[in-house]
Image (cartoon, rainbow, N blue to C red):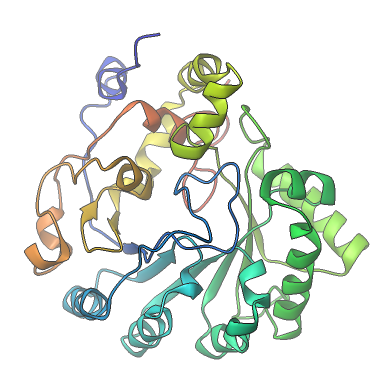
Length: 325
């Protein structure tokens, strides 16, 4: 199968070249180390990975935040971001600048002995926790993320709830992330959120604010699984056939700058994992004074971009539009 051309599809639909608008989010992948090794992980993170953000790069990231007030949010991802030594300095620095901070948390990391007090730290700093929970059933979660991960995730969620996370009206925001078990698109986000809310509250007494439905991207570990199972071509065809033009304006690459653990710049975390440089502009945090110089620049695209525009669309904030017909 010839790789589909995302840029050509945009042109065919009269959408023109994908370009940046004003950057609002600085998303930093602080490293690849994680206590889990999930089947769908596009980062290929795991316990044996050693890549991690250093103090000089962390300091430079805070300088860039301070230089551009339009950067409203510091979005920390990994791996498990909490395992990086610079995690807390980044959080404190960003909060001192008045920026919102997101921690993309796998939940189980909060139970590690060396992470004692991390949940309390997040609460103290009012960090928004975006937590991976790909299903509300033990069987499905453990199949995707590892043995006993579901029970440990519930324990971490209860801990966060006790700290006020996920409670109605609380400033301590707790969102959950769903991704499909296999080669399929997420169901409608609103319907799935209602089901999650009912199952988790009724079955386990757990509350949360929003559910974000995210499409599995056909790259890295998930791509390897698709190829192994002979589903790679069918999955890519599914994404292409469900291209939704209404999802394009909200694509996260338009107002997000992705920073790798070594300071390199990318249009999104997926491009970062594929080592596709920023569409046009500086190569690293050391080559830019602030994000204003990226306004209007083209975004680097590839076949995987169909994953963000299929069905209701997909981003780090969940669905982007109404589902396509």
